[in-house]
Length: 323
Ligand code: BTN
Image 1 (tube, rainbow, N blue to C red):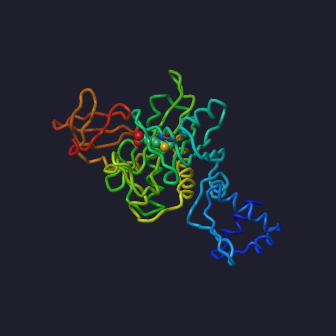
Image 2 (spheres, helix red, strand yellow):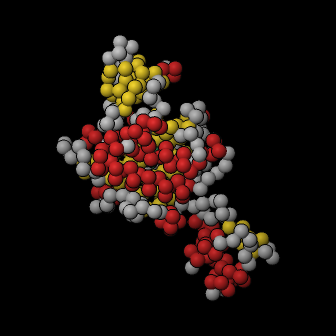
Image 3 (cartoon, rainbow, N blue to C red):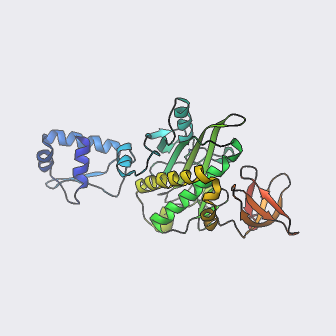
């Protein structure tokens, strides 16, 4: 009943009186009021005006399984879906589900994370309503050392979806940050459970800053959001659905051809290429990023023209001017 009411409210931009709703749904006005309140508790903004009735704020969207599943157009990804109000980390939740037998494509989304995890043990700020905090379970038949290229696949997917949906010039900073105007729009944390030779499962955790109007002081110079770039709040549901579709598509190519199947597209969107970079590692050096290999590694050319292949996960790449 609550869902029927929701669809009815969404079907018009006009006010609907309690009586009209009651008649359409075959319930009393008191019940209408009860269901309106239940929807409000779920986060829907429903205006009530005396003598006019109720009107839903259609631009405000709440993340819930029903709304997402309705728009989802995938084979497997997101079909087993958990949308949680608050969780420590969506990656942790997927790990728990995987350990209890969840299938490939199982997806967890949270409105907010209390312990969002970034790379290198850093925290990932995940305020409610502002972002897409999502983790997907994968079970690729690959060796543990190849898992990092799955992170590249996720970066490419995010980049393509945000470009297509919002016309923004999103770019990939190798290996897997998505940048907009030089600032970080999305981060990806891939975790796995593996044996020496084989992978049990992989968790791809993606954090996209969507409706953040501002960022905390410590990251405001380096972080950005869709909102900050296009000047209006956007619906997160199309982002989620398109992202799951794009991930599924690229993962299918990856399973057939490895990273080489998406290498050209990745390279086209990779802002690191042809730039001077500083490789931060034990034997750090400065060079020019010249190529991405079929395995997703970065080839850096030193001033003496010798080339070094850099593996993601081993190093951190910084543009030279930053250091
Ligand atoms: C980075 O440091 O750039 C990676 C950030 C990854 C954040 C996402 S948000 C969804 C998922 N759950 C987490 O705890 N982390 C990832």
